Image (cartoon, rainbow, N blue to C red; front, side):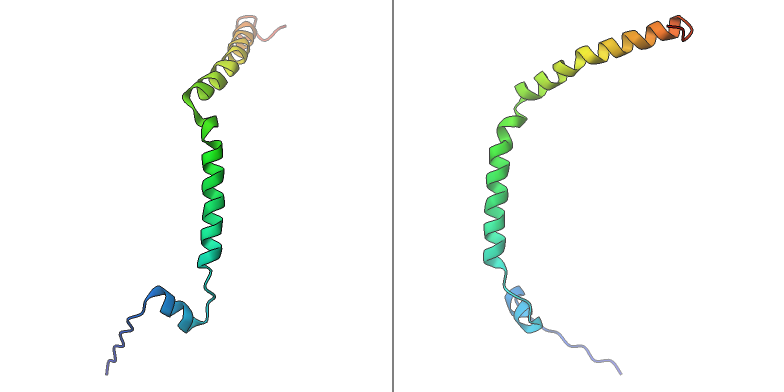
Length: 78
C-alpha cells in the first residue's frame, strides 16, 4: 500500500506551519547594510588603485630576485 500526500504551501505558510519566526524585516535591514558596505568599498576596487598596488610591490620583487640570483651565482656564499 502506498499513500502520497501533496501539500501546496507558500514559503510564508510553511514557515508558520513549522513555527519558524518571520525574519523578513531583519533580512531586509541586513541586506541594506551589506549593500551600503559594498558600495562604500567600490572605490578601492578601481583599476588605478589595483595597478598602483601591483607597481608598489614590483620593486620589492625585483630586489628579491636580484638577491636570489646573486646567491645562486656565488654558490650560496655571501
